[in-house]
Image (tube, rainbow, N blue to C red; front, side, top):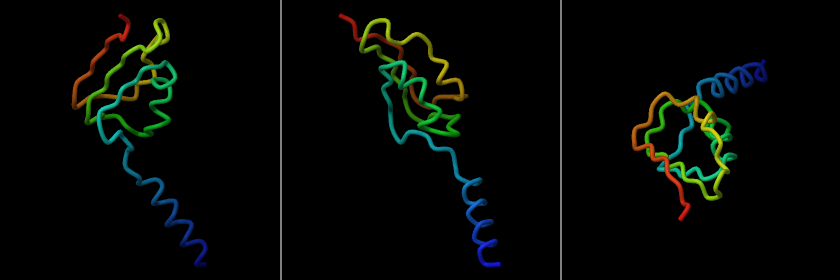
Length: 84
């Protein structure tokens, strides 16, 4: 019986975990870092800090679909290039 209560407690804790968002500004400089945003920060729909998208390698970033789970950004959204 104790095992059942323990399992139920663990399940409730996992379901009630808050969204995991970055704890500061982030820089996304590859397509992989953009694509993996929702896996790295599951449940994050409001980014409280700034996001900078800057290509390190020209032509490396093709889309920002990995950021689709975001509804809002509390800081700035900067899209730029590091090309000279």
